[in-house]
Image (cartoon, rainbow over all chains, first blue to last red):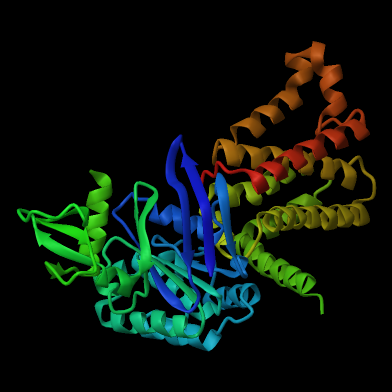
Length: 258
Length: 192
């Protein structure tokens, strides 16, 4: 479990993460969704220990052994794969070198490839492989599907699911939750640095409905926000139509932006 | 077994692999250069200090290092100790090969190194890659007897270069080093 209590990060007088309180449970895949510039990446960088919050507290068992794959990964330029393996094995006692080699091979990365001449996409795939092989208790990914090859996406989802089943806290940040819908167990939506909703994905799905924009909605229901030409409403009643997680994210983002 | 001690050694070993691999050529060249006797040693120490933590902070490696399970204090201390060890062994070899010969001794080198490692770290944290403040300080220190003779007597007491009063120079260097440590470890205005 990773717990954030009123975490705030300020960059150049902007509160890029604003008093965020949130929990990421163990043995689950948690997705942090929000538009570009909403504060997702800064929140992940705070979780990984790369940045320090200006105020608030981040608590987790073995937080210092979290493994983080940046969406724009930098890997030490002069390193060979043997150097990487040596450093990661020292930093993460549960590092699985065989799993790392196997993931590299599946991602089409040769063992003797030069890191300095790799494209950004390949570096990101390398970074993801290091995280999956780390054996760390907390695995953090920023926009992973932007660089995963199409044929590798099902395997990537399996690895996320398997990591959660093995007791890991898995945290993924994304702008588009569509492809994560089959694996997400907890969903948090962030907009303008604040969390606008956070709950179990199944509970969010069962408690939100969509209504055509022209429909008169009873004041007993809470209108969340517009979704294209419909409106997202919080209700357990089986009225209107079911919303997907992507529509729930959109409704909360639009509702909190207006 | 002491788990804290165990992880400390694992982290130290991992950092040594990082620093020696990242500075493979530079470290070997600088180590050889540091053996050369005479005041030129200070120039190579200046370059060495620049290649360690300040380069890590102003380059791209700091993000990856901090996302690994290193603490900020570990990164600062290990980086400082790596340079310290190179200087220690180089000055020892210099002394064994060339004797006293007017070359700065280990303490002279340590004071100079600690001062500029600290100043360069602050520069990297607050300004960035271009080491403008350390260069200006070094130029002023070097030329103060010509450009500001009125303050030379005072400056040279604390100077990491002239070290007219070694205890004061050592104190000044340690103060700068401690300030840079505190800024790096507890600072919340990261430039990376």
